[in-house]
Length: 222
Image (cartoon, rainbow, N blue to C red; front, side):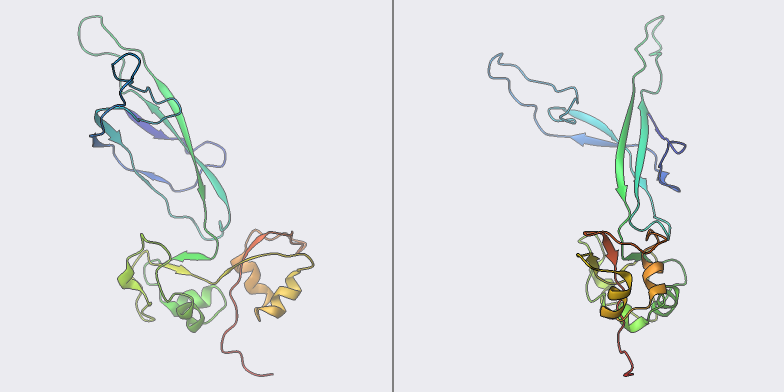
């Protein structure tokens, strides 16, 4: 079969890569139909591949969100079809089936994946903070999928693809404003805008709005 990423579709994630299909063997017995004494082989409508025995095709895709897309939600859609309608036996043929399957890809806010040459200092400069703040925000891994041996972070060397937390998430409350949050968390307004590129131009925030907070640390007394 063929799997095609629909890159031109509206709201498609830029830069998504589809890897070649691979075989996956399914070893789960199909459910027994008590009334008929036979097996129910489900065709996939609403129940995935439950009840299927044999070899399936698996397609994996990879995607690294771009900086500036924090908080965005993309639609990754794929067109799946059988590879050919000719089975090579005279005039016999099988119908061509096509299906579109879409997945929601949400870009995590307040996370950063290290690129080649990155250090804690270079990332801190990028976000207007200090390497000490980033180091204290990453005492452990953020997910079970993150290699545990990378944490706590080495300030001088970050393996490619290391995921970092920039700071905590905050959900706006009634009467909150950018000015009040800037004062409360000791963080400059410009840092707010860098960490939250989807902020409204007029600075208005809504109750419950998710925001990335990069707080100040080691603040000098005034």
